[in-house]
Image: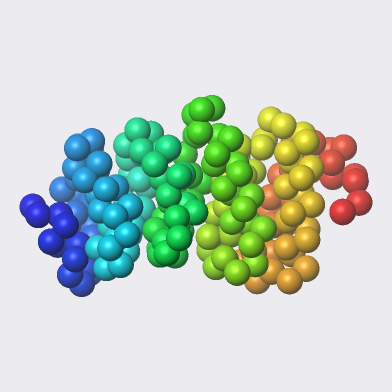
Length: 181
């Protein structure tokens, strides 16, 4: 399959799923998909991001080798929302190794705190930051403050995820729950 050619055309859901199945557990095919997703080509990177989400959902271990490049790509100027959304969604769904947690945390906070960023991206960034912060009370405290501030003007989706994570923060660290935000 010429992946770049297929992804440069309209990509239907059946085509997306067929590509996901073609990639399977093949690390080289997945690397090709990630390369297309990060290429910056408006059409093919958007469709590659869609396929990427489906592959990572079924085979999250494939993402591990690509984490540094994916995280570095998050703040590339001109990035499409679909590439950023798929990347942050993937980061929120996998156990990040320690060596990439710092950059992922910083990019996650940056995305979460930017009101111009689309809600889906901010919600996945919120989850990513929470996942990384679970063992660090100071980070949980900072995240709590950011979530509470965002809930004042956030969308329904933002507020729903925010309430759920604030509850989890309170369960993980009862002393934080008692603090007034």
